[in-house]
Image (cartoon, rainbow, N blue to C red; front, side, top):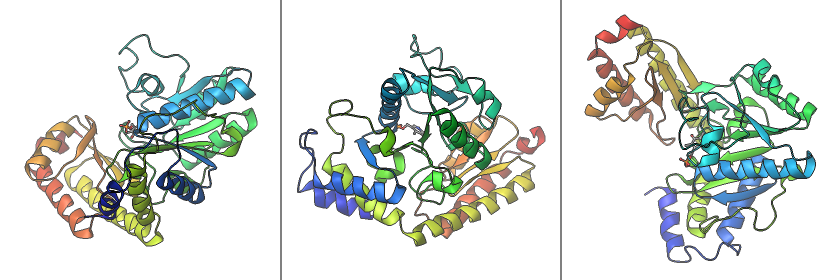
Length: 345
Ligand SMILES: *Cc1c(COP(=O)(O)O)cnc(C)c1O
């Protein structure tokens, strides 16, 4: 059992879910840890990534009402992914999602990643924030460039806008730094976390700097927000994730994975390998990713076709070097079983 499992067992005999109107010790400890580690000032907990992002959107809109004369539009990005509730679907830029569940929530203009001109073209007096994933995960692991994120930071400072990073996928060690923004050296005003934050249990968080922490009691909440059971697990997970040796191991495994993918790509005439930490994509140059996912699964390796032409690799952060090698071996065998692949590239 991992550290999270032991914490789950221990907390389960103490207290599960008291009223969310009351503070509880694991939630306070976790909030303190997260603020200390991230340099942010306040935390609000939720259960899912979508809920954290919805909280970030509400926070930005409220800040806009209080400090920017009602500005409420948030510049988001083509191919971005922020979750599956109505606000975060509108914030997402997944092709086809603008038609689903109409009418779509307003106020989420779409710019292009790594194209500062496309962001500037959308600015107007209603703009309150810019929101993005530092590495677009569902889009097929498309990283923002450090220069682009730095330019967004400068633009936000100059225009008085909030910079929101959705780190539900890139946070919590995934990029080889505890938070993705540390990998890029750009600090957001609002940061959301999910997925790895619980190491497998449902917990998410919105973190904000003091200058935009404008929620009052009752603005945001939920029955399970900050429940001690999940917070106790997250505390144990975070204690391990934040160890410098653990993060160094993530980076080293990531380089091992990258080298293996680059080799396979060359062998089979495939495309680009991109990513960081333990989040990588292999571009195939053709739409065979679902076939490869199936061929790998039959051989005992679970992969994801983020796009029809691209495979995404997100091994668990505490993988071993042997497991990475084994995974690469299975992928190699699956690629060899699909001789049509390289031809289309
Ligand atoms: C998974 C994900 C979400 C949604 O999280 P849920 O817990 O599924 O609601 C939001 N943003 C990003 C970047 C994600 O990868």
